[in-house]
Image (cartoon, rainbow, N blue to C red; front, side):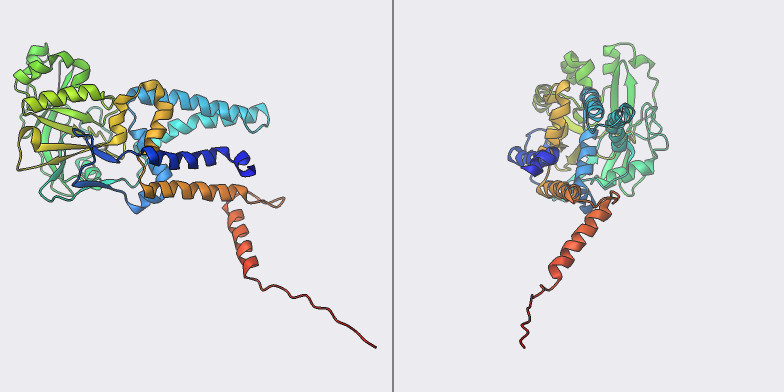
Length: 398
C-alpha cells in the first residue's frame, strides 16, 4: 500500500499496459477486410523494442490526424502545465518554471517524432511474388517537402520500412529519373487542379494546368487518383468513375488526410469493387516523420480491385473513428492496444527499473543519479555473498 501511495502513476501505467492486452489490436490490418494479413507481418528491430516506450510514443504522435493532433496538444499542454504549477511545492517562480517545462513536453515530443532518427518497424511479406510499394511520396522538389530531402533520402526511408518500390509524385513536377537502389523509384506527379490533388502514375509529360483548373468538369479530364477526395469532392464520386478514374486512395498518412471515417471508406470500397477499380494506400511522405502508416502489396497476377492490397497500422485507421476532442485519452489507449508482447515487456521493464531507482533510499548528501541505484544493488549483492559470522564464547576456569 505504501508503494501504491508513493508511485500511483507508475503502477497505474503497468496496470494499463497489462489491461490493454485483453482488448489488443493487430499492429497491421488489411484496410479492406479489417483482419491481419496472413502473408505479411510487422517486424520490429531489437533497438525499437528495447526503447519501446519512446518508440511507441513517437509513433503514436506521428499517427494523429490533424484535428486530433490539435486537441491532443491543447489538452496535454494544459494538464502538464497545471501539474507542474500545482505539484511539488517550492516558490512561485520555481512552480512557474515547472509549469513552463511541463507545457513544452508535448510540443518537443512532436518535433522529435518528426525529425529524430530512430529505429522503425518494417513490413515483411512472406510471398516473394508480391511487391511492397508506395504510390505517393515527395522530395524537396515539392513546395511543402522537407528542405534537403533528396531522392536518395526518400529511397532510404522507404527501404528501412520494407518497401521494394515507390512512385515519386512531387507537386506539379514530373519525375522521370531512374534510381534502383536501395529500392526502385518510379515516375509520377501530383497535379494541383481546382482544389484537388490528382496523382498521375507512370510515364507522364508536363502539362499546362490552366484548362483543368477552372471547374470540376475540367478537373475530371485530368483524373488519376484522389488523396483527400472525400473532403472536397464527395458528391462527385460517380462522376469520377464515369470520367475514367483508375482507382481511389483509401489510406493516406498525411495528418490532414488521416482522419478518413470508416463508413466513408466502406462506401468507396463498395464503389471500387463494383467497378473493378484499384484501391491504394499512400505514405504521402514529404520528409517529415520517420514512419509510415501504410504499405501496398501489389500482385502481378491480378488486375483492378484485386491487383493491390492495402495494409495499414491499426492506430492510423482508427483516427477517423473517434471525435477529435477524445484524442488526449484515446490515442494513448490505441497505442497500448497495438503493442506486441515484446513491447509490453519492454514497457514494464522500464517502469520497474525507474520504480526501483526511485525507491532506493539515499544517504544524506548523496546526489541523484543512476549511480545510487548501481551502488545500492552492488552493496546488496556483496552483503548476500558474505559468509555469516558464527558467535563463540570462552569459558575460563581457574
